[in-house]
Length: 60
Image (cartoon, rainbow, N blue to C red; front, side):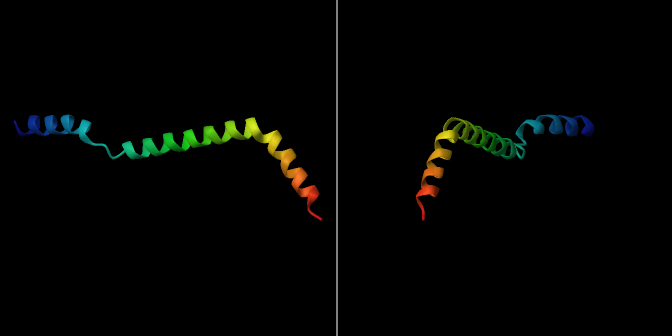
């Protein structure tokens, strides 16, 4: 009987363990930030490059 109770406790206890949830949330956050950065560089990269070139040329 003790073995059955032990197994039951182990099986039902698996759903309560949330120690890996934080890691998954941080990974999703990093992926989202990387995606936003890639989209921003792709969208504004050419314009920013020409702006920086103008600024660099204006410095004596």
